[in-house]
Length: 316
Image 1 (cartoon, helix red, strand yellow):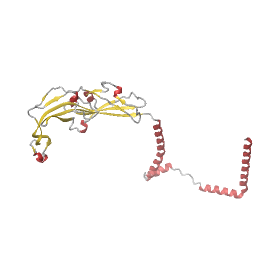
Image 2 (cartoon, helix red, strand yellow):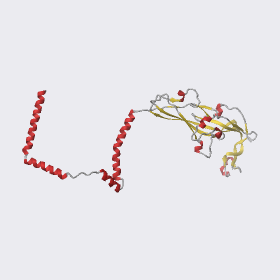
Image 3 (cartoon, helix red, strand yellow):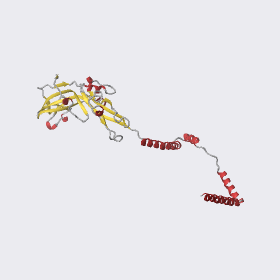
Image 4 (cartoon, rainbow, N blue to C red):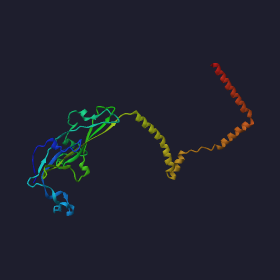
């Protein structure tokens, strides 16, 4: 029987280890087992036959389905210690910042400029509050304190760069991750050892809440250059659209629809070829019958041009 014990934990122990920058782990349950080097059933080596075990150390498959070979064996003289930590009200001070390099390279949006000190609901959240913020279903701390959980907390900055240069505030959202990736193996756990000597150690099996902190954002800014570019591109595409529609209707439609389309868009004019030939013949006939009319017209026009030039010179 495992007996629950009581001792004090520091903040460093509760949040150990700092696995990544920007993320935090909060311990909710710890089981510490004293181990010594020896020959025993290794829980990390399941087997179905002796071939599954380490042959070089004469490992054998025990009836328990585990390899019996040299390993870290539990010290039967010392009972494992089990600690359940009440960390629902543990406060986490979050700092988030974002910068839109292409829009405002000199401006940095940060929770530190908005709230220089911890402020509940703004940049200070308890573990319970973060769990209850999860969407689409809030998570109760009591549900995950036994097995642990992995949640993602998002700080979403949607800023009008040229309007709210100093007043842009993030929207905070959260979701649970461990149930999404493996619904049959939920929770979050890891092990780490504290070595007493070469032959003795303490194995800590830890479960808790892993908080992944992420910052996302979208910046917007009014740009006349982009508006002109979009309008010009749209106008070009408007000119291409009827041409593309005409090609599709003429060459890709079936025969019936193609003929219906051609009948509605094509308007055939009367044949004026004979009329133009008759008109041309009549002009040639007029020149042959009265050639002096053409010469008189040219002479008269030249006289008018000379008179116009003379008047222009007198006015100058």
